[in-house]
Figure (tube, rainbow, N blue to C red):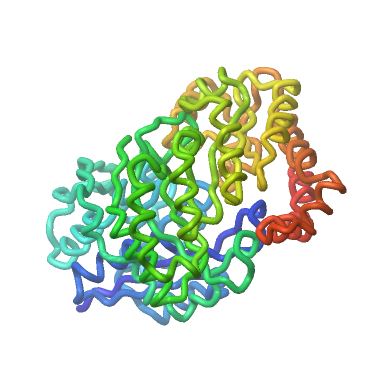
Amino acid sequence: MKTSLLFVEPPHNFWFVMGEYLSPPSTLLILAGYIERELPEVDIDIVDCQADRLNWEGLERYIQSANPSIVLTSGYTTNAYAVARTCEIAKRVNEDIVTIVGGIHFSFTPDESLQTYPEIDYIVRGEGEQTVVNLIKTLQRKGKISGIKGISYRLNERIIQNPSRPLIENLDSLPFPAYHLVEKNLKHYHFTMMAGRNNRYMVLEGARGCEHHCSFCTQWNHWGGRWRTKSAKRIADEIEFLHNTYGGVFLWLADDHMRLDIRGRQLYEELKKRPCKEDIMLFFQSRTDDVATNPDLVGKLRQVGMYWIMVGVENDSEETLKEYKKGTKTSDAYATMKILRDHDIFSHAMFVIGARRDTHESIERLRQYSMDLAPDFAIYTALTPLPGTVYYEKAKKNGWIEDTNYTNYDMAHAIMPTEILTKKEVQEELWRCYKTFYGSVTKNISGIFSKNKLKRTLYRHMTGQFVLEKFRRLI
């Protein structure tokens, strides 16, 4: 019997802070591209419940119609229940369907997840490409599962953790994501707030991991505390491919650490030769010290389509930055905002409240600090103990976690109190952060009528999506 593999992007809620958007299932597309190359005999299909507008009943009908032998899905902590429900539906359709899940959350909770969700057959921990191919081959020949590195599963009611799999050293060896498998949905992928409703939105991966070990971040731990990058030529090739082949305009370079010092000039040299640079809008994430020490490279990247940069400012307190193991200084943030303004790049700053020593006064200082920095866009988040972070282990050990509903682990819900503030007070302070930054009538009017198109779009979004009211309702 021929193996048929169905990737599922399950129904889930979108993060209301970012407004109306629809992301391509980039993780599944990356994995599908690799499996398609290595196992060409396997039938591969992807169902994206958001783009296809399928609810749970619609997904069940789709699985019945597709009749796959394997269902594979993944998700972050806030979508963990949706992933488990997908597997439950697959087993209800046909108990012989093999269910495989992956992603950061399940990589860090294999015991808990296999104990809680009997509908999950296998968990792929960490980097998935080689592990999934190995698992499919083993299932096809009915071989020994015990020899597959990087998976967790049940055996005679025991949970087995096979040894971890070594990381792929040459990321250039990976194929382009399999966007052709969702070609019918490409017109639906957009990020209204960032690029408008009609600009096609796509995600690409230039690197994996980070060598910094921030205490609230899962990413560095998931990728083994290392930073691996594709070559600048490979990244530019993929940008050009996504634009020329599929009409990608707003392209999110989803790397956790940009490393301008290593890749900035090379990426500029590659992109300046390519006509697509005139038509694309690039967005990337960076550390403030990375931007602050490479102002010339920021300016060069602006010339080849870099319009929007998000930086993790996090906090105004050097003591709190040390608690977060961030490794940056407040002076880096001031320098970064000036550099981005000087080069006409839209500045997007992230802030975190809810550290153990936070008080009403310390969060008020953070609010004033964020106003002084004056980024074009500010997002405030509640410190969230995501499984896989240093903070999670510490919070769990000390009994700080008051909300264990993973659906609320979206950084918009307060999960823990501080030494001084209750969980509810942290939630109230988060609302005040947004009210301070976006609640001024004068500021909103100037934003809505700004000469900067991105800023106009943003402030119209913040007003039209009633973001302040949505945060107030969380209290």
